[in-house]
Image 1 (tube, one colour):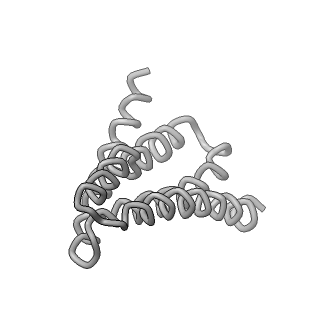
Image 2 (cartoon, one colour; image 1 turned 135 degrees about the vertical axis):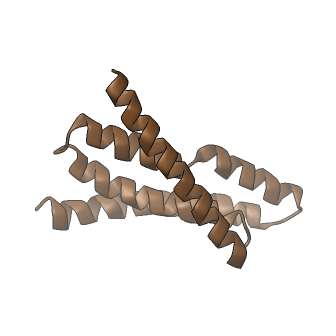
Length: 122
């Protein structure tokens, strides 16, 4: 039990630091809130790949990478905060941000699953 929690804890910590780093870098070049968009889209793509190959791995692989690392890397709470921030600033980007986040994240998860099934699991 505790060893499983440790793997989630470790992965979540690493994922959170990676998210913070990605957001920090993106905010230097683009509107800060769009760093979360990149994180969630990339995370969805990686999730699609890892979910497709994860069934062949141990529980610890899934707990560390899927629940921990990608759970810490991607975030719905930050997405919600970004939407509210854009909206409070009177920015119409909030609508684009919502639609692109949902559509791109789902599309990338499907692409990741397709790529993993086509090239990794074959």
